[in-house]
Image 1 (tube, helix red, strand yellow):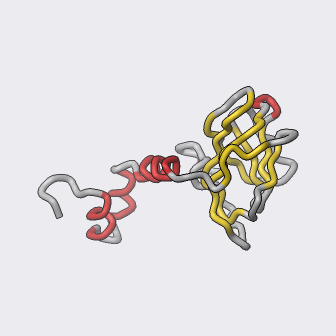
Image 2 (cartoon, rainbow, N blue to C red):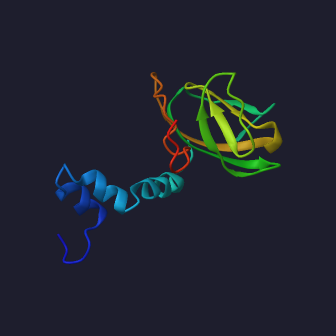
Length: 136
């Protein structure tokens, strides 16, 4: 380990398992993961969105990131998970847990980048779309 504060590799590889959660929180590990995901190449880039929704080319195991590239409101969207009863508001999208992503009508998204893992079994988490402190 370096004489200074440990780097990410050292922190994870050398930490006491009982203290790793506290150490990751202190280094804002969620922010680090968000930056890493944002730097990845989208699974589907500039994919056309029609009628405020997009059916992904493949079934998504985990939907990691959604960035609207064209429309009234472009940029990264907060990912909610749910069926047709969950209505996205501006700045949000709703993933149904498999391959359908719906956008807020107010955002009028016409194209978007999607980053997801291909998977036959969906994991019902939108790990990077959640706001800090969100507990539901």
